[in-house]
Image (cartoon, rainbow, N blue to C red; front, side, top):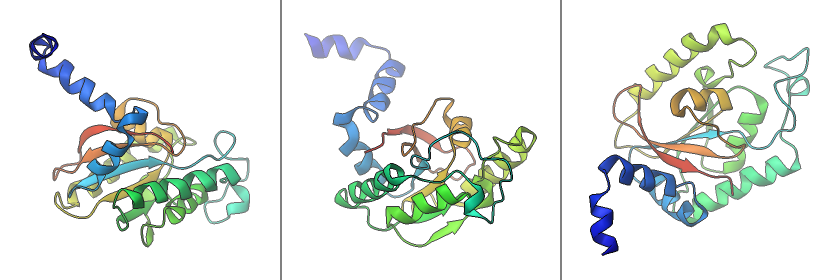
Length: 193
């Protein structure tokens, strides 16, 4: 009887329920398994770095002028890397915003070399840069192979929100399926460990 009722639900509602299950604790293993498939992308928010924005005098080439990961953020990033490894993801193409908190998060994942990618930089302090920055990121995404290694992009809340229209906790992220366009298909979320 329950199965019969479920099959009468609109397909979009069933799809939404399936996607939302990635965000639930019981769906965590499912989300990692999904990321292990070819052509998958994790757009990850940097781990916990107390505060908002960056202090006055911020310079991209000087971590002392930035808001950085605290001990909790470093633990969070390392635990996520371990969680991914337990799920079979021990190597990925890893790209990061040039902000120190993103670069450190990416390195602590332990998935391979980290390549800085300016298209992932925050536009929070300069909203007028938003459209150009997102256009560059979409161009980058369109060039990624739809059947390659998992790709991890470590970035900022506002960048992820531009693709999902929803919030992402520090150390959490959204999963996508690459499709040869600048608009990969959203699959669900990966909550922080």
